[in-house]
Length: 102
Figure: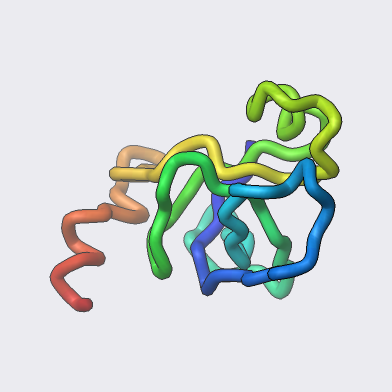
């Protein structure tokens, strides 16, 4: 799994029938210092994440297995919304703190 920040949504009115009902998000990956990396990806979102939230992203075959539909052409899926992250006993991210600035 990787940590990412939700940067926006992706809307596709014409898509494969196996993707019907799948919410799509544009996520940007984050490094171990909490810095945004110049790598973006579109991920399916069954958990209801919102813009600016930090999320856990599963990739590859695990993304397809998680949805219960192994024939969906998903390479990435949001599997969790992060509440807190700490590295070396120091807080790196807190959802509660981030929401104060919105």
